[in-house]
Amino acid sequence: MWKALRITVLLLVLLAVALHTWLDRVATQGWQEPLWVGLFPLNGDGSASTGEYLSTLRSSDFQALENFFARESTRYGLKLDQPVHVELYPQGSKLPPALAPDAGPLGTAWWSLKLRWFAAHAAQVPGRAPPRVRLFLLYHDPDKLERTPDSHGMQKGLVGVVHLFADSGMAGQNNIVIAHELLHTVGATDKYDLNTGAPLFPGGYADREQEPRYPQQQAEVMAGRRPLSAYQWEMPHSLAGVVVGPETAREIRWTH
Image (cartoon, rainbow, N blue to C red; front, side):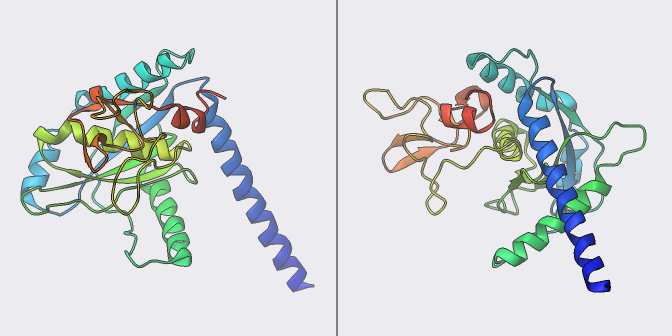
């Protein structure tokens, strides 16, 4: 009897989680109203220099994100003037759980659950409405770190951990990374080679019909870099040099 009861309770919990995930997907891919995205800045390395940089952040530093999604959605005929609304929240004090480099499927699943639990509590800011998508921005001093850790955006839970450089000169490229991870939370997939970073043809090219093919003038957002040749690529300086490609537009339900 008790075994049957435990199984029943477990099945109900799993059903509730599946239903919540489905409702999240419907809400975030319906594009009937602006998608509310909360940005939660964090001192990723605990340094004084990073802390000083965080104290200078303003909502206007992320206006390019809203402009980017408005511009690109218009190209696909989306009838919504502002598909994404970005809100900057106060700096947090606790860092989200880190994903171990050698985490297998089970380790990754456990990390995902811990991250969702962290996000549910960290996104509760007194006097502020909770956002639908929560992105935790971990900033690092570029003088102390040559390359940031990998960022992660998850559709299940609508949460992301984004590693960025605490440098005003890199704010434009930081916004590209934020846009990339945000799109992961609404169903977009990577369009670059995970081993080399090379944009994948055709989905990872901004203009697959261009002749000659190289150099590409813009980058596809889920590739993150524009191909200069078959063996060279670079990240644009800002979202002005980035587009949403047709595969990504279909994945996030801007087109069918």
